[in-house]
Length: 430
Image (cartoon, rainbow, N blue to C red; front, side):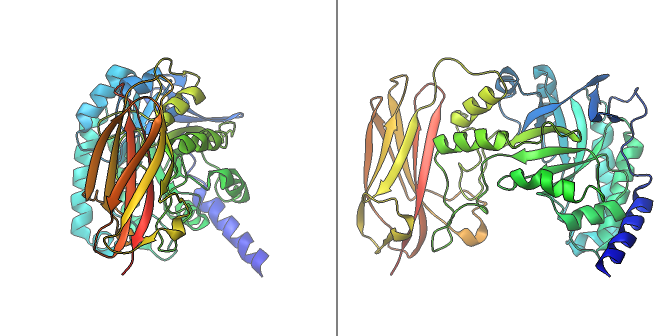
């Protein structure tokens, strides 16, 4: 019976997808996807264009210097300035258009809201469709379309794609997906029309992606792009007993980046390229988890690792190193349970290959893992110190009286535009 159902689904998909393959005609288009015997290619300005870039929009000159050619935005705020800066730097832009998640019925069941969104979408498309830096549009980031019976989302999404295509037939339209989801692939194949490619945002599961795609190649065999890759996310790492995710220090992050880069499906005939995450500064569980830059625009070892991977190594001064963070001599995270107001000693090894004078800043911040730390918490303690090029930084501190989870951060800067950081969670128990 299962084989019979699968066969019926296969026939349904063939019929539904008959007109959905990306267009390879129209060489006069600014950007398009071309299918040949050797696979898919993204064509820009008449030539094949392999995406080698980042998600984020900071430091475009540096990005170009280390071999990058593309950035990805997640909204259209300040888009004109972003496009102009990118064009001046020789960088292409994947423009993200924000969209509510697929299960947000308040939006997709409201015809007035749908009409208003289409009007706003049309305005943005008309405004930027002729910009020379525009590579393609990404309609929504991870809509999470897993519900087989959610037709209102598909109806609205198809209207939005139609609006995009009618107003701008010269640039592809992409879907963004978290990892590979068979349910989402089925929904897209059967209910969504007009898409040119799928972007996969994938971190710890990246090594599994090619096998997942091979398993469902009978259902979907179109072009794709790795829309985000990097160190394992805070949902994929080890956790303390109170569910606080453990973050790697910057040196280990660079090592992980080099490993995960080798897992990219660059040789896959359907792959159009990849984007490292995150080229900027953002808060996601912590203010350092994915970031290549500090809030002061300093760069860490991940920038240097990416430059090496892209074949354009950065020479000269390198970032400092901070490692081996301990509290009371221990890094056994499940033992870091403290009494309210108790006194403790934290230590971290710091060094710099260039013998720069180092500035060390300790920060103690509260955590709320239930809210996923989307807002940057205010530091309870901030202590800056200055050291010579190699030493052990020691912090004597008192934990808060209030029960709950906290995290101790240490950041080292070298005065040359570089930084390194690490952190450790602990819990105050009454």
